[in-house]
Image 1 (cartoon, rainbow, N blue to C red):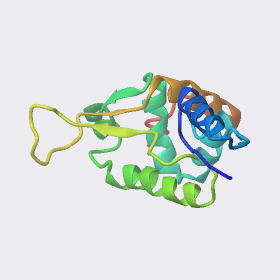
Image 2: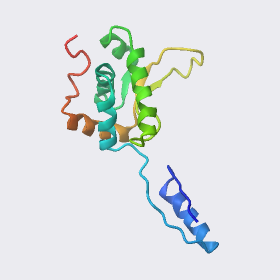
Image 3: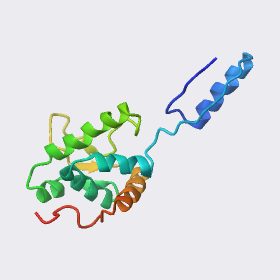
Image 4: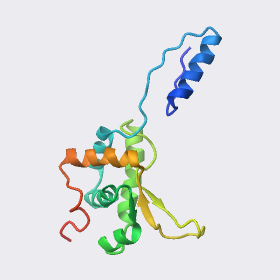
Length: 151
């Protein structure tokens, strides 16, 4: 019997093993790390066009929560091309099994306004901030000088 479980917690995998052993099945568990690692983040960042890379830096530098107005001001009011490049890179890497699904930088919207709206911030989980800081360092890209980059 072969069972593959991806993205499950260790506790869940242990429960599945216990259940299988009650039925007399012999299972082998291979841990598959489905989270972002510094290596995966480095590959992801290296795959981005420069404008999207420059967008990601201030989000990471801000600890994973950057007000969208600050980004709009830094990028002359236009974020769309940068954010599209970030999100389109994810499925390419997922298809090649380079990194997990799910965009590491996501927009945050005003919960008081459920209709169509502009993002109020861009965010990243704390765990991913540390991973992406390491990736930026490995790529030799400084964090604080990223937004205006000479424009």
